[in-house]
Length: 359
Length: 128
Image (tube, rainbow over all chains, first blue to last red; front, side, top):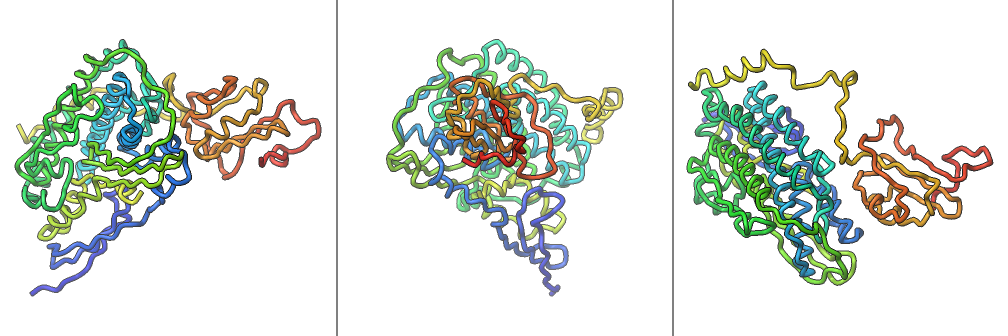
């Protein structure tokens, strides 16, 4: 029997920009167990809810994560609106949907780049981020921020985009879709990419369900679960079919994300066609009193906000369950049996966001 | 097909211009709606302290008695809450970010009318 050794992985690692630490128990080159430790960047954002006005807390919620910023703010606002029984204007709902899908495109392109970087395909990484920059330009032009959109507020959105500009953006996205396809075809067809991704970290459908995986991790194992089916924001009018893949390996997760980029472009185009005119926000009076679980689909998976108000301007409790936290048990399940060299790309396929997870 | 999947992109990159800019010499133009740093027209300010109360990071300090308004650029998150709250529209948001600083804690200080005593801006009683 070979000798067991423990290799520390992270919290500082060239592949992961985020501080996730794993103790890898290895036998020769094969990992037999992984022990995670998180909590390096706890910021105490949930506690802040007792000090900030519930309207001000939107700014904090948006800064829980840099990449899913828009959907974090949106989920928080939807939760508070649900408690206060506010009927948000239709145009605000559509704008939220459009910006949410833009954040999905830029997050997935970011992930594709990072994944290419992790398996050593540097030029593919640069091409993914070159296209992502164009998406970020559209985001900055319409919202005012590149990654922190700052458009959410309780009762609507803070900025409007003219219908003409939305139409132009919709046309622009069509040309970008061609460019994205050129890059994603390489992910799907190139031998070296397949060599690193196919058959690595296979998660079965039953395991994915039992371990509570969410997002592309779950859908790549063949479970059609997508929180957008709940019909929040404008997803009632724009039905979304969850994208699934049966393979359950790293390649499957890559395929799901690539298809979701094109699905997001399609959703934006349909939303632009259907967007109603009218006000973008409403007057909010009174304070939230009650509790609600808000669930939305982030690029990384399902996020849950538990919000409880007690009739004062400060909320009593807020709790966030982020997709990375839900995916950690699943990734620990698939790590044993992998070689040490596969660990970085395997970890990346859950799209880990540790600052979300530790808040 | 799979052997030459990248060929088209490689050839395209060889003949196209670089996707990046020569940064300090060529600066990207900001979009009109970009949320940059906060500017104030201090002559119009009535020192109502609404902006300071709306600021989620307490970056703005207003002293009504001393008629002064100051902002800590490193605390400011460019959220635009102060600009939206200002009743006299004397606050505005630039499209450029505030320049980098070497020392933390430096504050941009505005006072109207300008103090007659040659007091240094940092020494003014603005810690309201």
